[in-house]
Length: 112
Image (cartoon, rainbow, N blue to C red):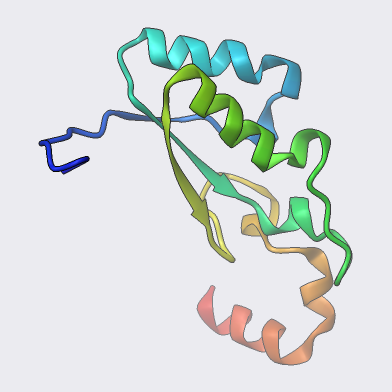
């Protein structure tokens, strides 16, 4: 339901961090032109916090601009922020500095 009306989500994935920001509009426009009403994207932790405590949200990492552009095109957004992504992305999107944290490393070895 959306605004008390039945709503069917038709979603396609565009990962903002995989394409140049100059291509975002074209990609989103094409998704909309194909009949989709929603774009889905992961938020890779390792793109936004390459070094512990230092955050980046510019260029390829400008997720806010990507979301705003999707809105301008007329798409809803399913944002998937998560510590681990299954998108064939290096280290599952986890930042490499986590390997220096013994407890986290042990938990990760048990998981894999």
